[in-house]
Structures are given as C-alpha cells and as structure tokens.
Length: 451
Image 1 (cartoon, rainbow, N blue to C red):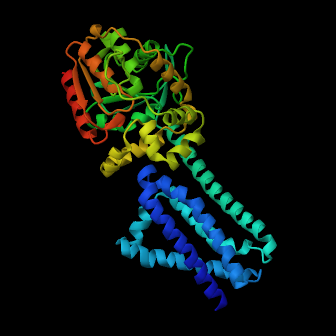
Image 2 (spheres, rainbow, N blue to C red):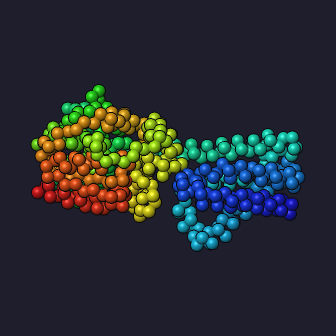
C-alpha cells in the first residue's frame, strides 16, 4: 500500500506537469515552430519535471533506498500514465489505439517513450540523504540526457544508412566522352532527359520519371556534376554540363530528346538547347534558376537565420538531419523555399511528396560538390542568348517561390520565340497544390512536341 500510494502521488505530479506543458505547446509553441519541433522542445522540460517529482516523492514519503520499493513506485506511475493515455485521453479525443499508434511521428514518439523509461527508473537515483539531493538530481538528468541522445543517434544512423542504401541501387554509370555519368532509365517512347535541381541526383526526380514513364515516355534521369556517383570536373560550368548531357545521350544512342530542367537544372538545360539545338526536341523549365534583369520584381531575400541554416546544413549529414527532424517546417520554408502553411493545408499525397523531398537530400555528403558547383553558377549567372533557342519551350514558375524564380522564368519565356509561360500564384518552389496541373501541362506539351 505504501508503494501504491507513493506511485499514485508520483503519477499525479508528473501528469499535472505534462498537462500544463501540453497546453503551452498546443496553444503557443506548435503554431510557431510546428508540432514535431514543439514536442521535442517540450521533452527536456518534461524530463526535468519527472526528476523533480521523483525527488519530491522520495523525500516526502521517506522511501528507503531499496530496489523493489523505489522501482515499484516508478512502475506504478508508469502503468498509470499508460492507462490514462489509452483509457482516458484517446477515448476523449475519439481516437482508437490502433489509429493512434499508426499515426505516431516516429521521432517525437521515440523521445516520449524514452521519457517514460526515465519516469520508471528516476526514483532509483534519488539519494536518501538530503545533502546528496543535488548529486542525485544531476545523475538523473544526465541519465535522461544520455538516453535521449542515444535515441536520436540510433534514429540518425538508421536514416542515413537507409539513404545510403537507396542511392546505391537503381542507377548505372555511363562511360561517356565527358567522363562517367550516373543515370537511370525508365519507360518506353519519346526520349526525355530529366535534369534535377540543387541537392539532387538521379533519385531526386525518380517520382517524376515514373509519372512520365507511365504516360508513354522513355525517361533518362541523371546525376549532374558533383552529385552522387557523377564526379565534379575541374570545369563544372552550365555549358560544360550541357555538353555532358549530349555525351550521355551519345552513350545511350539517343539522337534527340526533350529536356526538362528543374530549379538549378535550368541553366544547363538552356545551354543544351543553345549548344546542341539538333539534339533538343523540346525544352521545359520548371521553377528554373534563370537570369532576370535588375529591375525585375523579386521576393525579399531569405532572413539571416535561413541563410545560416542553408550554409551550415550542407556541411554535414548530421546537421541537416537534425534540422529536418527537429524543425521540418523551417527546412521546408528555407531550403525547399516553400511556405510551410501551404504544405500544412495540402492533401496527404502532397504532404508526403514534400516530406520525401526533405528526406531525399540525405546523404548530403554525397551531394556537397554538386551543391557548391550550383552556388558558383547561381552567383555568376549571365544572360543567355535566349533569342537563339529554337526548340519549343514551356516555362513554369510560382509567384511565391522563395527562391524568386518567377521573375527569371517570365523574362526567359518572353525572350524565347513562341515560348509558353505558366505562372502559378502560390505553391512555393515545390508548386504545392498544383502537382497534377503541372504534370498535365508538361505531358501535354511534350506529347505535342513529339509529333
């Protein structure tokens, strides 16, 4: 009975603290930084509350330093927490246990259940002598911190190993006159060369490739200079990359292809149309990195913290992974240049597409050289001789793209003879909410150009 009463009191103290922190998280923190980041930010405070409650109950009840008694108190509290969650909270929310478990976000869930382990064992670390109170509390906090770090490290290793496994399958290396180039081919029909954006590789456009292949095209998705298994040469300009596009087509014995340049894949795609006009059956530029005159209307530059995140994130897999896991909305708004609120309002398919693109950037260490080359191209981008482009051209951009591609896209379309421009009002750099429309436009355009 003594252990039961102490365990119930311990549970009530922790439950009250959790309720108060939950209200703060739901009303103020989550709307600002996102639910996942809010849950993880709450966790250290919750662990501190558990430690404080453990110290309080041991002192108040005068619990002896006996394993069975101390652990019994922790286990009673643990059973009460789980009972309250599954027998009271979930029914009040109208959520079935199976539905709740299926919908758990794995990272906050891992941290939460690790905190339950801390709840069960914290009474064991409380010293019986008041003079040792600080040392016992410190030991409890240290143990909790180590447990949380271990959970995060294991999750990081799992994710990075999965990312490495993903990019080592599904592609081939072509030995071309321009050097080795990684690529993947899918589908049958008119040839389409798919040129990825920054942070990519052949895997970034795999979803696109499958959609085009299902609609009757032979799609070649390649890795540009410095991405994955395509090495970065000494000269990695957009013109050199365009020549490498032609070399890849030569190696695959494809005489002529349409080219789709996405984001930072835009410059080399435009150069391909200019330098190899006989090989280019059509040109599609999707939210492209493109020149715009100084007078063009532009979006405001990203804030300093966003630039810092981008600069630091490309230096290490762990840094980017932490940012993507702890603050996915921050990564969506800065690195993916898409308003997070649009993603939150999108349907499940769109949200999963954006979540996949956040994860796809890993392993960043295999893309770093490509990102650095893209930065060099972006910061020295000249005006191309757009008037010389003879291929049928479709340019698509979004006005609220946080990379500001709209002005350059519009300017490009205005200076290529006969080019069609599709300007969307919202959707960010990843055209959220317009994916079906964008795919339909491109497929229709390519089908017409192939006739």
